[in-house]
Length: 152
Length: 341
Image (cartoon, rainbow over all chains, first blue to last red; front, side, top):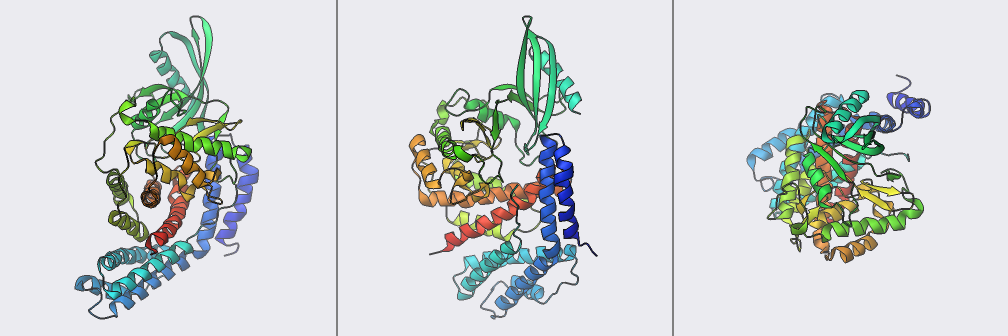
């Protein structure tokens, strides 16, 4: 589709800011329009990357789970959690629809939290390594969702 | 809707002030940014002993749903505690909980004239007055914390926490438990760190404003801070909670100038001098991590409000998205520091 959604949002934004907002009464209406403009800017940024961000996060968490559970029975001593991590590591996203990616993203993040808690409570070498890897992932995930805000 | 509000508030005003005749309410305008309450500016004219009078008032009405679920009595309680003090606050005129007047509870305070709040995204909101505003900002916070709670005129009951950091963390973790729409591995990890690394207790409990920051006070053209606003999260607790919140990077820290005012170190020295309180660096760091977690709790709540169509104000959608991202980035940096040897 041309123009792309992000192009439409940023294009329409110009009309909102120059043709519509100045004619609104001050106070609440203009403030709300500024918020709407910012949301359009963010939506434009998110449109292009939304599926990519989520698919990468899901793949990275599955790779972590595979790595941790692949170290043998010494790692993740809880058999139930280990089995669920292994199962999740072997799954794949069946669609790149954001709603589908979000659903598996939530499931994987629940597991990530459980794994992180376990790693924090253990002195074993695998746990320290897992803790480091999880923090590295959290930093990556956060950076990938960064939003640029223009000077207003 | 605005006309209806004017008519109904005029009736309320006349009822509360029977000595006033011919009460007229005009120029009602909703103000943007009161994310926790609907905020309106209005002009009230009346005759008192036959003489014409005029008052500019601010009305804060409970919304059907809000960013922060707070009791208006808490906000009014904070404002009343500092009337006629070193802490500039608006005069409170009415607190009404009976919904028969305006459908929902509300309170009314004087409008502080010729003043404005600094805008969050403005690169240099105080311009040539940044030094004066910054110094006053930190001194006023010092005055809030210098006040002995047993000497404050507290109109509403505030809980006295046994351990202020535990009470604060329990509260905001509870908000996250209740409102999160998706798992929060970063926030949960930060909360566990906070639990494992408790701060030293405060030297004494103080009134905590709860949202003391750039954007929540009014400044006039001379650079005087004319009012500290938004007391809806005030409570008794550790004063470092306010200090850390004011320092938070989300309010803009160009070159380590919180709120685009004066350098953090200078502000902290002024605060210590006025409050008479020392700062334990480890405790302050704990409260800075806490501030980001508390922020996340507020933004998570906001996201839920919007997602469930309980409040479709664009500012609620914005708060659920952008500040949550910023506070995630803040948390990553703070936790990097926390984990470094």
